[in-house]
Length: 136
Image (cartoon, rainbow, N blue to C red; front, side, top):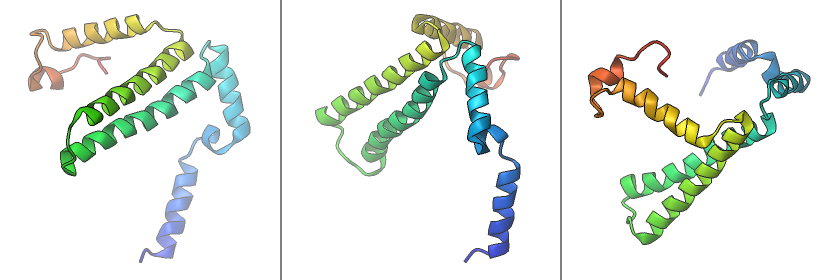
């Protein structure tokens, strides 16, 4: 059983290291207003972020079942994964709308970044570990 003092100490610590925008609805509204003024559609961005985490979880749940629970990978599982990928893409498109970026540009930027990281056009651990500044 966990020590009550440890729980109280940890809860106090969590509260102290939490941003004001996370603890206060008013501060969160101020932050949303600021971000909206920067031409970010926060309602879409929140929809995208929260939706992506849920849909990626559903996709991973299928992988977990076929990998670790020995469920069959049949046409039904394949179709289910394809549908979850479609849901993921829907939320990716929401994020693009929120940020006013073109999905084709996102893909091209990613391809350019990975082409610089892997000049041989093949994965290798050395190139993956030695990234240029700003390569995220």
